[in-house]
Length: 396
Ligand SMILES: Cc1ncc(COP(=O)(O)O)c(C=O)c1O
Image (tube, rainbow, N blue to C red):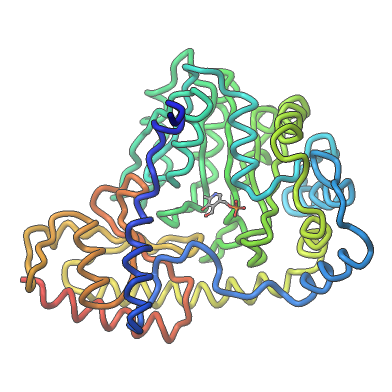
């Protein structure tokens, strides 16, 4: 018998779609992927070289549970350089991906029945992670008309004596929204006043456009820093999703609890990947800038093309590599055997008729949207948008 804990877990909505895409590809049908949640760039050569060096130098053993000291020192330097924040190695944990850092953080602070507020749309794993701790996810809908900005009044109204944390993500997956500093600061002040933590997932920090920069929650004041656990990693910034290295910085006692938990569940993250991550943090500025420039071009192009399509109204988000148009206009419309009544219908329709893969917004608690990732070549985006435009025109 499977545990109740796992039985309560909602399986990924995108799994069924992945199966359909795989079947089409097997039949030799080209599907253009706008469903991709990772940079389509290769990990830079200098980082790969360091991994090779790591194997030869014998970085092939366990490391301390919280990660190699050299890497943790490099992470401290990163926070000093980027945000003028002071951390010591005792305030840093390296994990097998940001996902594990997030799980560690929730396991460290959330007791059964504790509430964790999550603005939605959101990355769906947050909700399952909170449930696994026995905690209660409190979902608060953000306003699409405001570009899914952080709506502080709505969050504030959900704060109770059981609120243990608010989990925010900016730049955001799936909306691409970048939260305004003044809003994050107000949230920080609420955390100080009501004594809860902010878990600030900043994995897309390097991908902020239009001259804006990432607002690092912990950098807003010393008091807010003491309430903030920052989650980050090398996956999205350095095209290293498969290397599985994430990290967290925060109050020493929270990081210690996270390390104790990680020590028992995983021992330590992959050591050659940790060694190579030092190089990623130290010597990748040129790569990051080039990747960002390319993503920015694709972002502008994608939004322009979407807004030229009748019935689509898509705001231009300033971060990550996602846009999330609303598709309500098409509800009730038909073509051949297809009738569109929800985002899942639209995903099926676009896959079958336009051979493009987009993600159902309900997977992120966006009930009337689809998520389009522009992590694909400009040429493919162009072809994919042509096909989408054609398919939408056929819906009557
Ligand atoms: C918002 C967000 N946080 C965390 C992660 C996980 O990152 P990692 O690959 O480092 O586990 C992702 C990956 O899609 C993400 O979108």
